[in-house]
Image 1 (cartoon, rainbow, N blue to C red):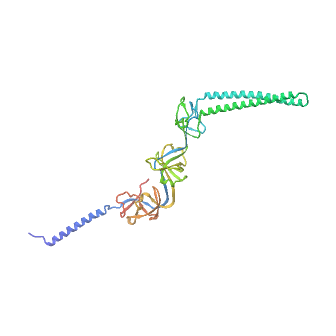
Image 2 (image 1 turned 45 degrees about the vertical axis):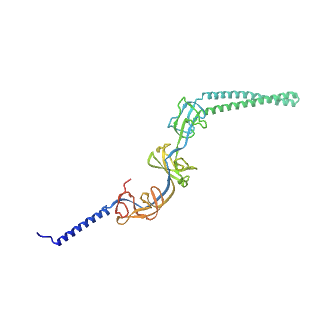
Image 3 (image 1 turned 90 degrees about the vertical axis):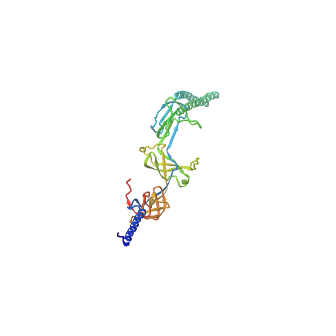
Length: 392
C-alpha cells in the first residue's frame, strides 16, 4: 500500500482553507451589501418658488349663509295663502305667506266710507263757514256806514267764527278717518309675510288652514319660512388659541369641502371672534369666519356642508424650497451624490407648510434630494438610481 506524501496533504489543506475563506467572504458581502443592484428612488430637485405659512381649523367648520332669516308673521292667524314652495327663489319684497284677514279688510272698507262721509261733511260745513265770513264782512261795511247796529255786527261775526270752528272740526274728522285707514292697512300688512332680501326658500312650516303664531320673547317656536341668501356664504371654523395671534381680518384663505373632493375655493377672513371658547373636554379655540371670494351657482354649495379652512398668514416669494416630506428628523435630507451614492445633508429651514419647506442653507438650486424615503435600503451610503415619479 502506498501512503500519501506529506506535500499532497498540505496542498489539500491549503485548498480547503482558501475555499472556507471564499465562502465566508461571500457571506459577509451578502450581509453588508444585500442589494447587488442600485435602489430605484424618486428624486426632487431643489428649486425656487413660493412658500406659505398657514394655520388650519382644529375641528370641521360649517358653511353658513351671510344672511338667513327664520321668519313668522308679526301677528297670529290662520294661513290663508302660501305663495311660495320649498326651494323656490324669491325677490326682495315678494309675498311669501298671507294670513286670514277678511275682518281687517272690512275695517279698512269701513274707514274708507267714514272718510267719504267726513269729506262730504267738511265740504258742507266749510262752505257755510265761507258764506258766514262773507256776511260778516258785509255787515262790517254796513256798520261802518251807520246802516245797522253794533249788536247786529256782533251776531254776524260770532256766527262766522262758529262756522269756521265747525269747518276746522270737520277737517279734523277727515284726518281721523285717514288715520283709521292707515291703521287698518298696517294691520293688514302684519298679516302678510314678505321676503326681506333675495334668496331661496329653504323650509316652510305650516300648511293652508293651520294656525301660525309669532315668536314671543323667550319662547322658541318653529318659524313659518326659512329664507337663505345663498349669494354670499362663509365658513365658521375653530382655530387653536395658539394660532390666534397670527390671524388678521382680510387674510387670504383656502376652503376645502368634504362634499367636493379635489378642489379648493379661495376666500378671505371676514371675522375673528373677540374671545376664546373654553368648552369642557375640548381645546380652547377661537371662532373664525372665512368668506368665499365668489359663489357660483354651478358650484352647488349648500348651507351646512362641513368644511376646512387654511389661512395664509405669511408668504415668501422666489425662495429655495423642497417638499416637506423629504425632511428627516433633525432637518436632514438624503442628497443624491456622485456616482449615485446617497449623502446625508443637514439643512436649515425657514417658512414651511405641509407641502413645502424653505431652505435657507445646506442646499443649492439644482441639488436633488430623495422623495421616496419609505423604500427599503434607502439611507446614507446606499447606491441608488433615479426613477421618474408616477404621473399625476
